[in-house]
Length: 496
Image (cartoon, rainbow, N blue to C red; front, side, top):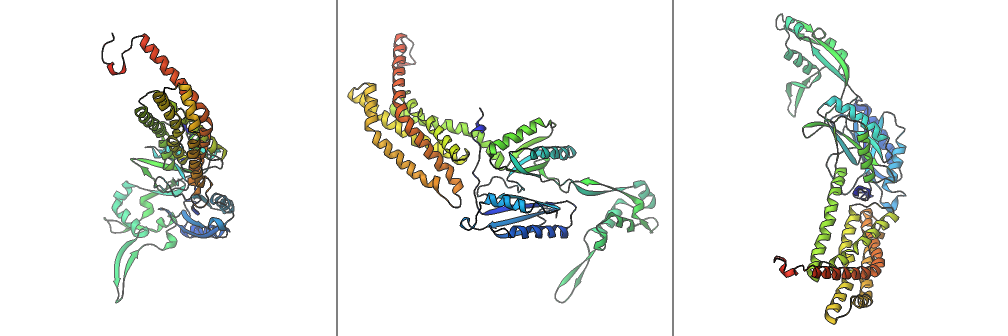
């Protein structure tokens, strides 16, 4: 079974009281129309009883077809819903607006990656062939929208903008004495912002910009009224004679990641699903799509950090257990008894997982930190019993059964006292409320669940394991003596 089936979350979603929204309209929209729709969005958002203030603006990237919203919610004590519930309410309230869509996410205190997208998680596609990249980005976007684990799937590409390509008839232009540079200068004079003069007054100076009237800048029909001067005859030649205009669709901007063009698909988690389930669903849908091998997909930002953490967690746990084993082995001068102490840790891990499951929380980074803390807290129960039992065996000559029995009886009170102190110390983490409590809650739940489970099980299991390992050590000693194995201080000498 893969680790991702257990380790389902990264960081818990925190109710920070701040929502971030991205509004998208048709790429061919004008700024005036976009601003009108942004005002309509702002009025709907501001009317929500949980919203304190809302700031919005149009033109959040090189185009005017996108806008941004920054929503401040009222304090938690003054509103009747969480940030996630307010987000769902606002999304439903703005769904009826025509010509614009709004994507929102709850702003988090801990974020990974600096790429701003409409969703909280990003999946980036790269391909050297731009046409193939745009085609398959649309295919995968439609497939991802059908996945129940994610929602609000959107792309950062705007491939539906109208495009006018001007192709110069070079034979005609050469025959009439018109160069390509002359055509370029004429187009820039008409539709660019060429400064041709500066007017100076006593208090200020003013730049004179040459361009056609604004009402003629919105259509390619105005190209028929432009003329280029011939270098042969000095006469004006109609631009429509020299060029052919072809209309089509093209992306407004082409983003790059590294050396290749890239399109990022962003998404949010659906209610009731974890990040691990969403990552597995996206990967499965990508494999089943039959995409070309040249198209490479990878998670970015928080989703990528989540994947990296999955690969590091087994080594982290193994390193912690190895360090505990070495320290205990040096302390007891034995290779067997440290295993008795380490055997108490699985019960703590199972207890932490069950507690998180019962409380409806995922095993996230905070829950994993709690389990790592349990490695240091839980083993003290076994240490108290085994340390006393070994001292009684070596100092008083008691049998293993009598030694571990006395250890359980005499160390029961300190074991219970230290465990209860740790449990009560973790209660504020598990029961605390307020801003940021979602981040601390899994840590406290994991500690309390692990301590309770280990307390119940280790009091009965540790003596049994201690006696079993003691018998195993005696059996190995008899086996070594029977086969005349060398002692530990003469392993390098040849057998007699």
